[in-house]
Length: 447
Image (cartoon, rainbow, N blue to C red):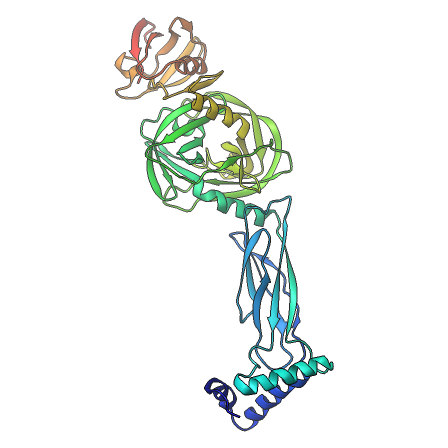
């Protein structure tokens, strides 16, 4: 009876006591084998939302164990080290907070290293089977079903991972912000204040840079729709089909650290819906109030504005619009606001239908080029952009705008509302009082 070279190498690899031990192990496996025992270790969640653990199986016949996935999970994927039993489970898009469990089965075998080949192997197999038949030996393998329970961080980390390729990093001449792609053709949602009065807007999606144009906006709700030029087949998010609910877990991504840095991420819960937030307008310092907002426990930083707020299924719940900061340290508080996806959808629909609606402007923004503040008798000009419509007609810081197109100006918001009814190239009639008290009157062509 001859043995193969591999078999000779396995048996001849040791001498003396080692050879006797190998022979004893082979005899023990053939006639008295004991199945491996499995004691799975505790599961650990990694930073990217995966779950990992070791099956901690033990061989009782002196031979090495091998591990193989027998039944794959229903909602994710799993890989396993076939020699160590360390597995990594990756949640899939179907796994949500409503179904935070998944399972798979693994076969652990302590016979693959003990089985001989060729004629010896055939004889060993017959004797081994007879030993099992008479109850002397046990099966070579054992099977274990692993149940994976994902907490909110795991599920939401997976949702953020799926959303990442649709996040838009927005750069303007004055700073940066965030947006999210909502159609494969390059339609992007963001916060209006990120792109308001900006003439040079570029967007990076999945590492590629695009030029963007403003397709429409709702100033009152701080929502804007951008259109990326020369874009096609982009990854996009789906808007949530049901309203946000208090207690719901959510996550958000942002561009706080800049386009060349990793996206910022936050996980938290929705505290309340239909909330109001009053803050200073970024271009003028005067107070404005937003309504209908989602309040969450997620801290956000400048640059995160316009970023997606998504649920456990990676559906878009809202668009980040503002956040609270510590007055002393400037650090972000666990308190931020988002515009509901339903409101954002009304702007998308108006843009797609090319039909302006209440508070929604379709098309590019008409730029006047003056930063404004509150004055007792109208609206004071605090800054004028060089070469702008305001600059061309002679407006200067300290002047007070009293009327536009015959409408009395009582606040900076009145100016913005009037301008939102116009498009670039339109001519408006402006009346103001200069710093010396002299009344002025000019026509201005909007940029």
